[in-house]
Length: 337
Image 1 (cartoon, one colour):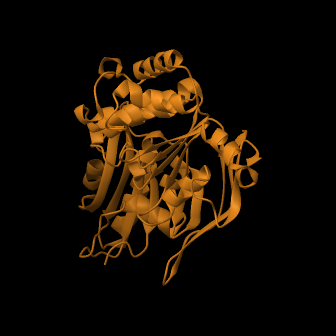
Image 2 (cartoon, rainbow, N blue to C red; image 1 turned 60 degrees about the horizontal axis):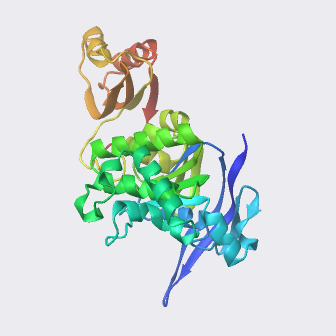
Image 3 (spheres, rainbow, N blue to C red; image 1 turned 90 degrees about the horizontal axis):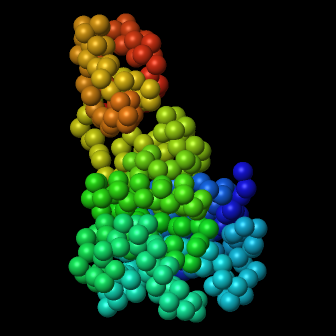
């Protein structure tokens, strides 16, 4: 596949009066044309700094970024502005112009590039139809819901026909239902127009929902990369395991147990009570420490973490049963206690 973004040895150090912070430490990453690529990490990991380096809104301290083979570090300010018309961005808090109508917000980037008012309005109306907001063109941002504001922001980002769309925590301010709708819209845009999308998030569920590939950022370093299903099923790094198992905010300080396993659902019918059948077969209960599963087209997708009984023979029998049901089973070390 053709590489559209190449991040090469990028570092970023912020120097304060009394200290300095290494936000990025030698990041190397290739993103291919047409991908929906997730960059995920805990708060403060450096992911938002990285996305701002992708279009040189934040200049790396060292290293560089190539967009379609162009080294951004060698471009003039004017040339950088031209590149940025092809690398659009949407944000967590929408960044709409509150004194402008929806239509004029979408027209704004076209005004900057000297497109005629007539052509700008025609393009804006075309984009508002794509994001499902044609009837809101004369409304102001204050009159819109959070999901509608983000749709306006997406329409505005698409105004200049970009090849790349950067999404910096674009769904973090939205409720789960609205998040799902916005992600579906982004996926539709990717499939219909071939725009490469880079999603910055701290939510593994967002990555699972829409991304084909993911990079895990941990304390300014690149901890792990790969296809989403591979990282989800068999996370290798400490940072990936933490994001997959717990998410950003969950803690299990008081749970205790010697043997825990993680099972990953990818192919079982949602109507098959696998865990209940295992308990009935083995005649011993288990403790469910975490469950994150969903029904997608009648197939169960997600994960569970189980605390197995103390008796080793029964625990082994349970593991064998789960494997016989085509579930990924992984033993966890020091998960609780």
